[in-house]
Every structure is written in C-alpha cells, then in structure tokens.
Image (cartoon, rainbow, N blue to C red; front, side):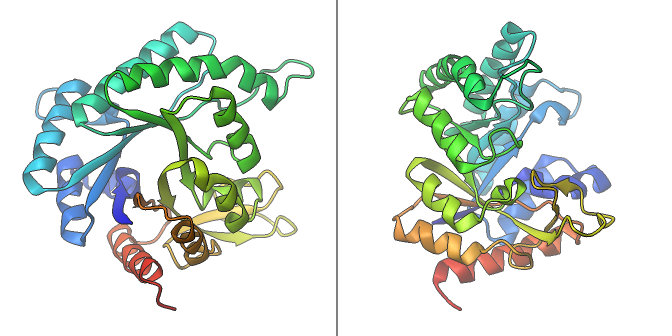
Length: 289
C-alpha cells in the first residue's frame, strides 16, 4: 500500500493560517506522504483567479514539480436534488476539474436524505439514482477517470446499502471508496464491514474516532450522532476505537495494493495529529504490534 493524505485533514490548519493548497502540498511531501487528494477547489484562490479549472491545472503542475502524486478528487453530490439537471452539470464540471488535476479517481456522494414521501426507502433511492450515477461514471471514463462512492452521509453508510448501490449501478468504472472509520456512524463494526467492502474497493481512507455511548449525555466536542444515537469525535489514527490495524490486515489478506489515504477530522493539533497518524499507519501496514 502507498500512503496518501486528504486535503480535508488540513481543513482547520487551512482555515487558521489561510495558507492555501500549495502550502499543504509542501507539508504533505515533508511529512513523507507519496500522494494527496483534494476536496472541492471552489473555495480556493490562486492570485487573482478563482477559476477551478485554472487552479486545478496549477496545482497539478506544482505537485508534479515536487513529486507528490495527485490520487483523487472528492466532491459532494445529491442525485435526488430538485434541480437534477443542474446537479448533473455540476458533477460533469467536477469530472473536468479532476481531469485538469490528472486525478485518476473522483469520489462523489449520492444523497444526503431520502425523499419525504410515504414508504420511500433507500431501495427506492437506489432505483432512482443508479442510472444517473452510471451516466456520470461513463462521462468520467471518457476522461480516463474512475468514479466511486464512499460509505458516507448516513443514508448510504451501512455496508450492505453501499454494496447494493454499486451492484445496481453495475458499471466496472464505478467502485467504493472504503472509509474504515465511517462505518461507526451507522453503528457497524468496522472489520466486518471491510470484509463486505473490499471486493469493490478502488481507494481506502483510514480514519479514527473517539466514542461515547448514547446512554450518557452528549459530550461537548462530539459533533457526530450515530444512527443508533451514540456519539463520535474525530481523533488521531491509532488513538480512537476504530480497529485500524485489523482493518488493514483484512485489506492485506485480500491483497489490496492501492492507496491508503489518511483522513483526520479531530480537535488535536492538526500537523502533529497527521504526523502521528502516518507513523501509526506505517506501523500497522508493516505488521508490527
């Protein structure tokens, strides 16, 4: 496995320092990452331009210069949006941005909530959105880009639901961004979920959480309430309750040989948390106890 990092991991650092993506590319390289993935360039500026396609091209050139591989582009999406034509146009534009980045992979969400209609279930959502997901994946394929969906966003968080979605889309260019931490948002044990997900995995996120039972009051700082009413807070990989090493062992047993991308969303010092998380990931992949 090769080690990457999501630009999302630097979100608080970006907000506090206003440093921009080029600075975090340098930081990622200095920390020892081989690759980086980006999330939504819409809030990024480069000098006087905020044109995403121009910014993507400049980021690509800079990453090539410092020998940091761009591994993915990550965007939101709602295939149940009222303005579905506008949503599809936005997604095609995001594919164009991924192409400018030379990112081989684009992750998109699928829905944020189900339709407010009596009897409407996630199965109805799958039937409605699968042709649209297929359309975007085919457009991306024409650009040499694989698309995928992450177990993310509660509606399609549980592994059986994501599997059913991917099976229904049934497109060899569409797969799963396996996030080993996010399964806890659906109160699903991560190792068993990884076993379901890995045959479809085209990319993997390593993430960790602190956990508190919903039987107690919600602690300050625990921003996520799970489907089962428990509480989560992002933390340094290796410091929380996600069995990261066991998940990695399952991936190794399945001969997964792709990217393992660190994603941090905790309250700890950002740079130290990312450094410590990478050190722990290297230990886990190396097989040390």
